[in-house]
Length: 460
Image (cartoon, rainbow, N blue to C red; front, side, top):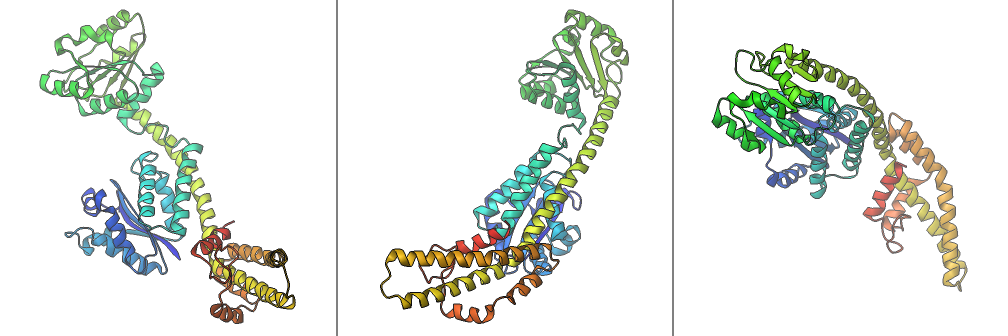
């Protein structure tokens, strides 16, 4: 069995193409059923976000599985031809597919490295696949490990701690000045887009009061409504500067609208409590000489960009640590997948031991006509214990050999030469025996739960 991923992302396609591949939430179940209807797909998970649309699948043959997923994606929209889609698709198989998923879940492949939303989206798509019985033993293990890897990256690195957007950098710098932003007041001078974004982040971090001033009263009222703030006439805002802990300036004026004298007066009226000013306008709206005013802290776009660049460098360093975690955890999953190759042989060996045990018990029971139920149970328990102990060493050696072998099937086949399994297989097919992990009646074939238990035991 092979794990594959086929998809598009912000790195390989335009947003218009990704929109065509998106499936409405109400039709995700239908899409999953359509994917699983393909004979070359045994397990599948469908992941879609604003930046990527991907299909993870388990298939016998990589090329056939990739072709099936490509066909599935090309059918997503009537206007989307295979010729238009194929140049933008990427494909990974085996360790590269697992590595890709772990990097996606850990936000190492995101447009903004370290963003937190992707992990929730990975969880949601895995939940959808589980709900529609599309994920099985392999993808269950791989996705559960991806989620735990992402959590480990969050815990053991600082990949998400530093802002990498100018608007959010304003929040970080304000926190350095004030510590806690809860209950603070911000004054927005102008209604530029950057100011709106920064104000949204500030409010999200506890800023309670928003004062807004702009020459355009209609535009100003729209922002007042959005932030549940208070409008201040533009010709009167300087007289109210002292009410603001944070002043965020973003007007279209080609000159300074706030100077050092107004700021010095405002600081005095604040009893010298700190005042944080952010100038995101180009050309600048706040006179740089404001920096000379005691307890006034001014940052312009260059300061914000420098802060963001330092944060980007910090994230790059943390991302390198995260990549190491991903590599380690991919190795764990690959060893587990390699060990699955031993499962058929383990089942055969357990069936063989059970058949031998039962045959010998039947001979023994035939010699004793008057055994009590307790005596029969004691003999069965003794025989089971002997069989398990005799098999234990062989099974442990088989698991180790398969894990360390480049070709697990060769190791498993070699183990079969130690026991007469071929002759026994014919006998067990005509007379099924009780499986050690099965809880069904004597003589019944192993249940699906028993076989699943065997698969899980291989990983131990």
